[in-house]
Image 1 (cartoon, rainbow, N blue to C red):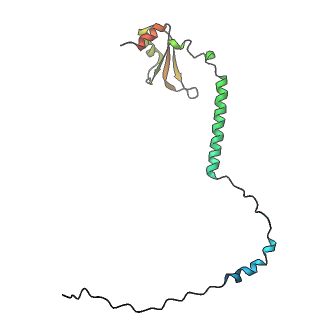
Image 2 (cartoon, rainbow, N blue to C red):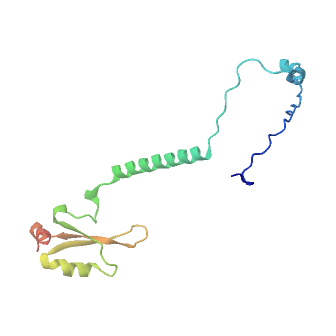
Image 3 (cartoon, helix red, strand yellow):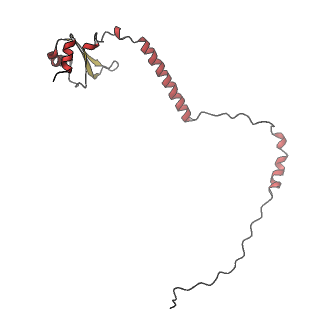
Length: 155
């Protein structure tokens, strides 16, 4: 059974390959430059000057700022003496740290709430030194260490 749809094609005719274009000889191009070679310096090339990239500059500046900050922090630590701070508590074992205080809460309200555990010697509400804004935490110093322990172990 033969079909019109499945028939072999006739073989392709031979085609002669293309000829490549001929290029000029490179020796003829280099020859005139050889006359000027004597004008160039002999010896090793000069040292390459590397410029700082923007990324390197940014990194260097960051490191400099970091070192300055560390230096300032060390100087401040040498100056800092908690015993001479008038706002510091006298005895840390009698002091309670209270955090996440509401904006509307004041020292009188804290005293009212915590006085049921014992007499309070001092309440220090912490504010930002520059802006004066309340930082939402306080230190409550009790007169007696046993009153302080009553808060911790109260059920």
